[in-house]
Amino acid sequence: MNLIMSENRKTRYFASRAGFSLVEVLVTLALTGIIMSAVYAVYIASLQTGVSEENRVDLQQSQRFAMDLLMSQLRHAGYDKTDSSSANVPTIHAAGQDYIYFSADYSGCDQNVSPSTCTKSATGLFPDGDINDPGEHIVFCVFTDANGVKQLGFTNSDGIDGSPDSGNGTPDFVVGDIDTNNDGLADPGHSHGSVNHQAIAPVEELEFYYNLSSGAPTVFPADPELIRSVQISLLTRGEKEDKRYVSNSDSFTPASGAGPWTGYSDGFRRRLMIVEVNFRNMGL
Image (spheres, rainbow, N blue to C red):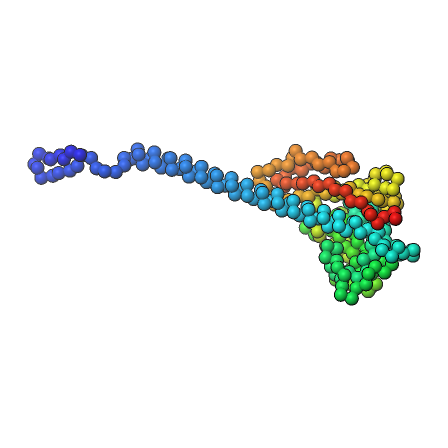
């Protein structure tokens, strides 16, 4: 560092000082901005990935819950431990492409509970040979709720909508209200008369593909008592939209081969699950 003296030797100053030049500061700021932009981009990408994965997990778990409930309850269709010979025999009463109504001789299930928590009460009896007890008539079907969301729902003879079921298990719902035009599809705004549904999970599409005792498959059996198994195709949609995902190329084919289900042009992820359930109590 050079020390410069003025001519009158009264003023002294340094020709060079420690520090950064303007160019160095600008270069540093530019590099810092680039680095911070990269860090922020990584953070946003990680955040979006986390949200996407959370949506995937929620979608998967919601679908599994709905399918497990369907499978566990459908296996009880026609359950008749006492081998009743009366006209009041458990069976499949009505079946369509997206609905099924069946009965089983549970006898003793607690009042006002969903099928997934239906248990024997402390004083309950074993199956008594009829289907007049609470909870022994069950309907699964697709319906549209008050918000316009398609749901998989159920109702039963427990009066879970708040109105008692006459005390003898008589169904509170009107089965004919499910499919008033008899086309095999549940009417979007149906409510089984005065009975409300309990939503199980949001669904996009649902198909029951039945196999009859003759081996013939159908989605709308003329005689539901001839059903021996069913393939369930359940298409569910995530609750949150993923802005990075576009579903306009998604295509899903149900067990019947009909369709396929297409025409989705939003950011919601969808997932199709197909399982087969044997009605082990039918045709015995």
